[in-house]
Amino acid sequence: MPEGFSDSLPLGRSTLDRDAVSRDRPGVLEDSWADPATRVAVLSGGRALLTEDGSGLALLPPTALPDGALLLYLGRTTEEGDPPVGTVVLGAVYDRPPVDGEWADLRLDGARLSARDAGLFAELLGLANWHRTAGFSPRSGASTVVGRGGWVRHPDGFEAEASGEHVFPRTDAAVIMGVVDGRDRLLLARNQAWPERRVSVLAGFVEPGESFEAAVRREVQEEVDVRVGACEYLGSQPWPFPASVMVGFIARTEEPGEVELRPDGEEIREARWWSRDDLRTAAGTELLLPGRTSIARAIIEHWYGGRLEGDW
Image (cartoon, rainbow, N blue to C red; front, side, top):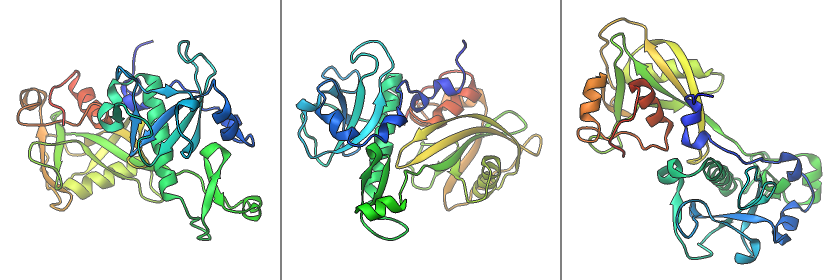
């Protein structure tokens, strides 16, 4: 089966069975932590512990780690190997590194990890980021505790749990789009906060009551004063920094031929149309392109038709 756009997205890959049924089993975290067959992915300061050779995520037995972590039920393995198929995988989140070793940054290292490890890392980091900000109920203000294997928080106390007042993980949808003009050139822009030479495609959060396509059209008009019509969905991937899913599109300008760009001056400082020849020459020298873990890089190379040099 040929690889499509979504198959190429580093954080869109995953082989783990999230095993949602087991999350609801009373005592699932305690029982799994007590089982020597369980394996644990370790997170501290937003970074995940790697194997000794640095080739992938370390999956340790619980006995190799100290108590006191925030435990999360991540699922079960589905691939032959070490650990074997069906192994329970927990996430353990520590305030400080509990062991010595090499630690990975998902934004920088996600593209080089296997599908299993990239999916595990994204799941673990997204959940950990949510727990960090969900210590109190947005409805009542009461302090919350972990439930359902780490996938729910509820106000402390049996009565609150029985009342059904639960806080669930959230994901914020954002659109990200390669905008192409009537001459088949790609729009690349520099954010106000970025250094010289660093560019990317446009992106923005979806607003309440708005479709993905409407968000694409609004963001492009707001940021560079260009109207786009046709929006082609490409694919999506999680971006847990802290809690987004990036939904990718190719959008085409309504006007044929040359279209003037007017950066808003607040978020976007510079914007320009690039032909394939110009981009190939500038990538890695005049321009620094988004890192390979990002969907932005995938969109650019999808339009270009191949690999480009010049990472952030």
